[in-house]
Amino acid sequence: MIMNKTAFIFPGQGSQKAGMGKDFYEGTKIGKEIFYQAGEAVGLDLKALCFEENEDINITEYTQVCLLTTSIAMLEVLRENGIKADMAAGLSLGEYPALVAAGVFLCCEDSPEKGHLYAGRSSEWSGRHVGSFRLGFRKD
Image (cartoon, rainbow, N blue to C red; front, side):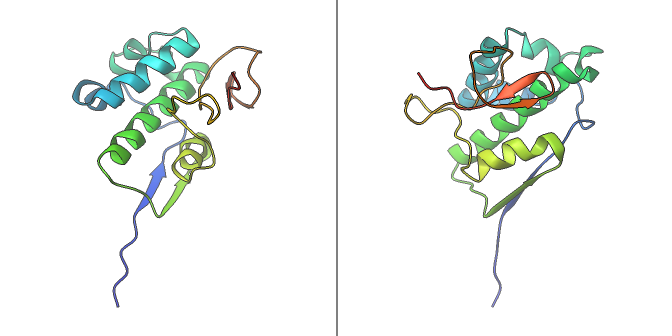
């Protein structure tokens, strides 16, 4: 008996490169929404950081939010197309989108009681530090 399983494996810091996520941003509504929401949350132009050649993408506080945003955008596009993971893993920072894929953290929900995974630099949010950014559940 052949068993087919799907695994999503998310990269960690060091895998960043200019242009990452651009195809998901330009080609899908959900990808564009993820980049917009994350950029608003952290007050950064993530399109410029992720899509254009620049040195800032190699600075930890920018790298991590760029990788997280790109990974979440890719994950949500896959989900929207009915592709779900049987298992997920991530290297270092990649553990966070893997936890989203596994349903441990919620992302992109409209309902405040479900929470929102976000990356931000505000002390009003409770959560776990990722570099100088925090991930957590927002309780409205």
